[in-house]
Image 1 (tube, rainbow over the protein chains, first blue to last red):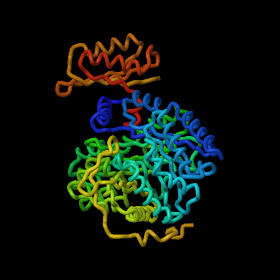
Image 2: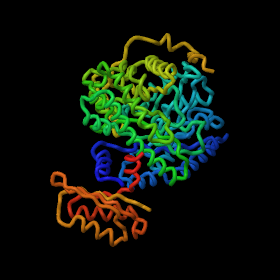
Image 3: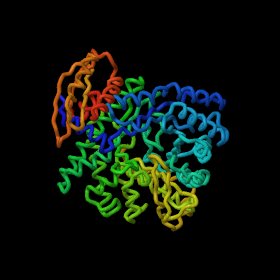
Length: 454
Length: 90
């Protein structure tokens, strides 16, 4: 029988420590929507999405109500559009037309975001992939809820440096086209290496070709809960520290598992995975940087940060894996800058630089995330940053990503406000030395050797 | 069996349990367990109830309990039991 103490503990996590389920994301395959006629293709896409996800928001809200647990986002991920629009899109503007259809479907359904305006080009680009990539700036400028991602490398294929070079230019162009809104288009665009097929988190969510027709993936959160748990064991040994993180991660993940199973049952869509993530928000007390502080660092970025983050990430996985029947997605601690007040404070204090963040991405969930940089940063420099991050992912067999925002008209010392969950950020300095001769080489970086496994 | 946990938190006052129980009885909701403590002057109660024979849905019960809570100045939450079971039991 459940005890009053257990009830109080759960409710305290929800009410005071920001425990929530970050997202229920319905993955929908659009492969059967391909058509040689663009209008028919758009119609099929619209109909499939609005039919499959018709009740997503309502059921998400019902579940939240019954358990009294906030479910912050209801989202949709779709087959990378470059694979769907190949036969009917002859120009980037044709793809933009699909983007409008997707945006309209997302708005009608009331979901928060729709991800999958994407291309997977880790080894090479088809004509369709390239057209889609070239359409991204306009698509993101003209829509509100569409998220875009491009996978430019993997451990198995190496890094497609032609795509890396192109993405530097595309990010700049996206920033330029949305400069009246603090270049917000770039906050909806991520460049990945080793992108998973079942990620429920934006902006990198898409429904990979290895997936079923439709699937429910859930992303949990709860950095606040971990931080409060660690407050109660201040000064304890690493053993106690790790056990506490594991136990807390277990509890957080179990809530995600419950919500996922319930959503799957009611929507009549199979349960895919739980993404075990500590996803921060700009709310005070909902910060991964605050956990690092509680572990013993004055600010995120201080010496010891990479070790502390590696340990945190690993314990979250160890606790979470047992709590869920299927784990996938990105799974780990996210370290976005603008979405985490503790990270913002660390940057403001001069403790955290892009280089240190890059080191941190070697041991945690994703990569350089929601980092605002000067608007005059060269495209080749952005490509260089993408190449570095991709190399970390490729060599370490993990997902890495770059979601970087060159805010047009702003420079180091300024801050930028994105609003909502995207938060606000100080403009961070970027290494000024040139890498264009490296970036301008054509072709790809070959796949690395991993002890000749096969 | 549809088990729901009702938790009440707020300043102690006369008749809190009576009000909650009366409403449950009127909707044919049976109480399986009650525990209660007072922590630093705050009334803290938890009930496990069975809603299989209930004449109303959980969402309606939540609405009604919100109204009762407001009337007597306490916070009343009604949650499906599974969230606690999942979190605290392996």
